[in-house]
Image (cartoon, rainbow, N blue to C red; front, top):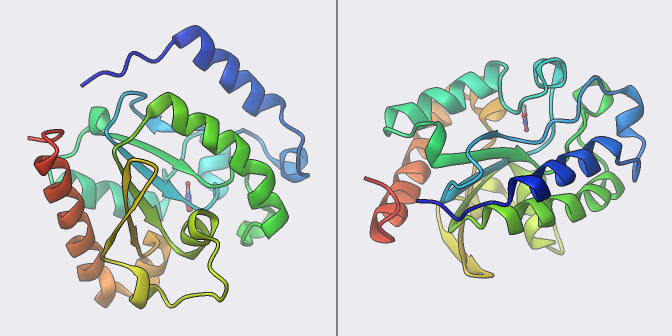
Length: 195
Ligand code: URA
């Protein structure tokens, strides 16, 4: 499945990300973390922001929580070509703190552009930061209330689930993320986008 990303334009976009100074996070970051996986993937997986390992390697979800996410995706048969993994914020917040609403807002423009390149049909939002950035809820929701159901928005089926870092701290909740990814797999199959 290919949506023929224009690589010249994509390279310019990556340059734009690396040169971005809309918030202060770039000042202390080693790398701008844009994505891993495929530019033509039907599934976009979106986390919060890079941590230490991600900042050092310039790739999202390559630390401990990334390993959990990767194991889960692999257990369903996903490979690199099936997903585009990224974050709400492209630069690491100091001490791995949550990005502020201003930082999220500043980075959302780039994510919107990224979205227009990849054109995913299904999105998996991992954790409250990703959920809130997409849905702007009036009050902070409980993850247990918003996870596990699809919301249709902009031609996309959006599923919210726990952040893998939460599951490292609460292993008994892993089963919920497993269930949510199963729904994502079912949706992709229904759309003929996953075997
Ligand atoms: N947590 C995230 O939200 N994203 C990463 O890339 C790594 C850890």
